[in-house]
Image 1 (cartoon, helix red, strand yellow):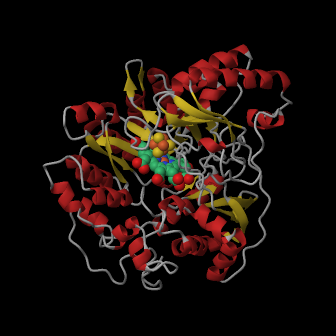
Image 2 (cartoon, rainbow, N blue to C red):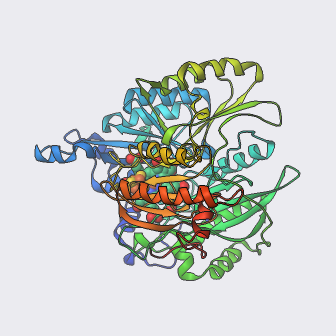
Image 3 (cartoon, rainbow, N blue to C red):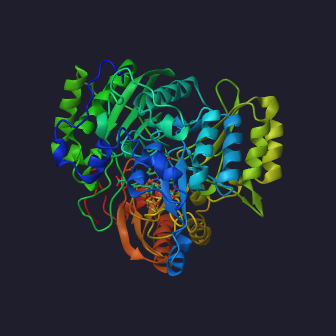
Length: 576
Ligand code: SRM
Ligand code: SF4
């Protein structure tokens, strides 16, 4: 997005500035996200920042949170809530070097409660960072060439890219494009350096935000690159998804899918999960113009009055897919070609060791819910640190919250394997197919939107479901289960074969029938139920599945064939 060739869109073309919602006015008047963040950081009277600055800081990957485990107690004692901050790193395609890992580990130990969290969009989150430590953390990241730009906020979020552990040339090529796409679409404001690196304000040669203007996007905008047959990134959950089309291992171009989004808001029937729709094919050299064209359509026509209705999926459904496609093509100056054939087979990670086409070795480690932490019987964080100290290749965070120790020379494998054994990191060999395909969002105690437990509860629930699986001989069958603490869908539960979304403490909606490779939304089977009802339902449906499934049939497909839930055909559900 070249500053000299693009107009400064200080307001969106379809909605006049005086008709914007409050968040739009905040952005427009923030001096390109500067707000009063510097003053808020300097204020020693409170461990929080002002409400407006908290909103603006999201554009820099930082969320103000409070410890919800002690919120009521602090209120009773008339104390300020226990505020701290979550910081999310921008890490396109989930790639980081051992040196970066060691720095992330140091920062986590010093400033973020001795833990790192791998996310469902292939990056790291630090939790519980105190306000006075934020700059040190951000500058520490800068020292290893990392930043947190646009990891949250109304802009392009972390760009995802399929991580095939065999890391073929095609995967390297697509990853490089994903990285460039992130650098291309990230916001440009000098506020980042001024606030976090304490740099002087510099004069800009042209508009400060040539693409975004003063009001940025109407809402978050997510881009991802999938390489068939793996749909690990859940390409149909992206606002803008690219499906790589290759010929004899060489990248030719991409099928383009638009309008995916999995969030819904409790009790708000106008919000719904929607799978992305394929609109055609582009040659690889048209990638960046296509990103600009699609994003600019959403920038200019997305709803800037009602944030609940501001994601691209709603713009598409209001305007019509054909209209959005035609407007995109008009901006591109050419028509998209017909989409090319492709096949997805799974959205999970193949765990364990694999050898790449160039003979290099890779090991996909199972990390339960992406939580990197030491416990008395499982020193995971220490183990990964020990590996980072000797590893000469790369690490890759997967979209399923797992981790690949990538690019290992065969002669170095024994040393890595010995460390894995020493620290007990090779547990994927003994885990059930359900656990290895499970994901939970963070939820309590840090997420301000959580209505129920997720990360702290799913492992125990899976243990109880494993007893059922053992009874029916299903222990090794891969079945996807994803849980979130609220309907926002951060662990993409609406495309799991078993989905659970929190409604209240101990209460969840249970969804069945999602597609094994992320191609179909699931449907609600039980509403607002506790563990006994969930286990009873799974005992019934899994038992039936074990008895009557066809060869190779996945549980999600079976749940529909057996009539437990109807098939969601239209790629979205409007209500339950
Ligand atoms: Fe998310 C908001 C965590 C992936 C949909 N998400 C949040 C916040 C920031 C809560 C908040 O706004 O105050 C959560 C912080 C919790 C914490 O304490 O860390 C949060 N989301 C996460 C992560 C960390 C879940 C995880 O356990 O890994 C994921 C970070 C991804 C990243 O690295 O960027 C995460 N969130 C997702 C995904 C999955 C994806 O993108 O593939 C979705 C569904 C896809 C989508 O966007 O449609 C998702 N998060 C949401 C939504 C609902 C958006 C909507 O359109 O309705 C919210 C709420 C909002 O934006 O208002 C939300
Ligand atoms: Fe928080 Fe809800 Fe996202 Fe879970 S799904 S992290 S509870 S916003």
